[in-house]
Length: 181
Image 1 (cartoon, rainbow, N blue to C red):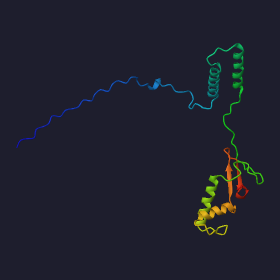
Image 2 (image 1 turned 180 degrees about the horizontal axis):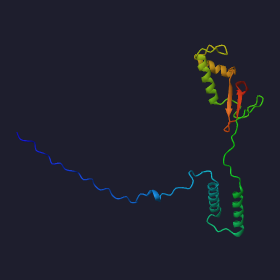
Image 3 (image 1 turned 90 degrees about the vertical axis):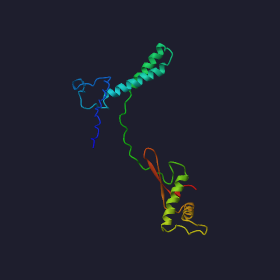
């Protein structure tokens, strides 16, 4: 028997990678800040932002025309007034309060919105379908719990309060019987 032929072993040479365009910085060349953290709320950043805003304000006011000495003087007064303004860093936390007026609706329409009606009828229909007692005599025409809840809403007998909320968190609780029909 003849011995199997040996296949020649070739070593693939790794192609040289191209040299980087920029040499990496050595550890000694890296600049580190003196402080560990840079405070983003530092007065310097606020001042720089204010000056940038004033610079943009100047560009808008100057436009493409040349200003007279009087207009330049007025512009400088306006810029100085901007510099003197108090900078509000953080808004004060508003504590939500309940607005109340005896039987008077202070926010929103004096009637129920379609969304409020849908929410009330849906919640009441669910209660009725789970066995809650109805507040009215069941009409002959009522086929579903939704029909019963609609009649209860028309008669304003559902003991429910609507909470209307303003964007700042203030709210008003309005009993169902205070709404106009």
